[in-house]
Image (cartoon, rainbow over all chains, first blue to last red):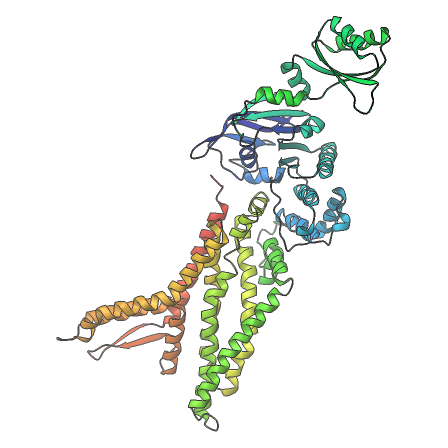
Length: 318
Length: 313
């Protein structure tokens, strides 16, 4: 895959602090890239520089080969940008909002009506076409914002905290929409501090703290590199103590925490810390079954990203 | 046969420009939506009518105008001057009021970034805002035409007066709209741009005549030669300063021009007598006014575009 966003030695200094500190980052075509970091880590500054809205102190960023410094207009043509706050024109209808931004991208009037209808359909706002923008719920406004970023069919979507402030249903809807857009061939670069979103949909993750990139790669790469101990969750029927004693004899198992399930007295949940590869983990399940212990659930906990995040960031900024 | 592509841009009328500029179209649509625009036009016309009625009754009560053609003509002139003068004064405050939020409100609503991230140029954004505000201002002016027409019933209005009055109104509308836009283009809050625009308008309308009064008072001994002979050079200096200040003060330029026309001077030259019997001839204040305010408009619009174009540092 060819690189579509290349950030080179990007630095942004404000009067009293350095928001982005010699950041280097490459995002390839087709990726859903989660840009993760605590508040004040430099995510928004980086995104605003890529969106040509903020001048970098030094370094450069290129989108589809166009420099944000030298060819901002070309960059604007290539990206769809959504800020962390939805800008509302209180006196506009939903279709007028999209039509207006379509006109701002010089899309001919004759094509706009059809385009607006298609986009409203895509973000499931077709029936709200004639409603006033400020009467929409936060989630709907966010979906409308996403439709706006798509109006000129950009290659890359640059989204700043697209899911912040949304209720759980709206968050899931936005997440699904992002996956759908990636399927349609868009590269998605979005910042977030909601780790569940990243774990759910991102193909790649970059973790930033105090303006510096502390880790980048696929989720698996980060997990492999940083998490030495895997956390495995096993639920057994009745023979919890037997299972615990047996598991402790197996290689790779370092500790076990047993909890009984409140609604099912016969079930016990075992949290196992395990070191070893996938084959070794599968051998644990085989051994439990061979010993005749009734296992009804066996899974590796996907808490990995939070652990990675906690390990990598020092929590210096908040 | 291969023909060269037609690279010349088609000349667009104001209406076409409005339709093609997304910002102008959006603004007009929003402005005319609901009752706000209707109320504003009504209020404008009612206020003007009330003031014109007051002048009409005051004038007709003090003059025996009816059955006296010259009296009627004088009444016509008074009504016309009142309507144009009041509009000129109101424009100094209404025109910037329609543009002070143009850019700063986009910043407040957090939509400025959205617009700047599109392919919309800073020029289109600024001109779109200006065009939409101006078209509403012109609508207000059009709504006052029936009141001006009242003056024509009495007669006494010359074509020159109508022309000069209209040109001054249009230039004032453009310049003061540009003034509001200019302050809006670099402030983050509309409240600040409103204060700056109103402050400047008050300075131009009220402050400059006060400055003139003070300057002329200070120069009075030399001009009139109290305790000595009058100084011709001081007189020329004073008259020139007076000409400059009158030419850049909206209402003063209008009133002086109207007074000149009424006294039988031409529309282009302002003759001021000097104590040695000569006259100092300067351009009519309305010409100075038009030149200064057209230039000011161009500068303010160019600066607004520059401020909007600026990438945040």
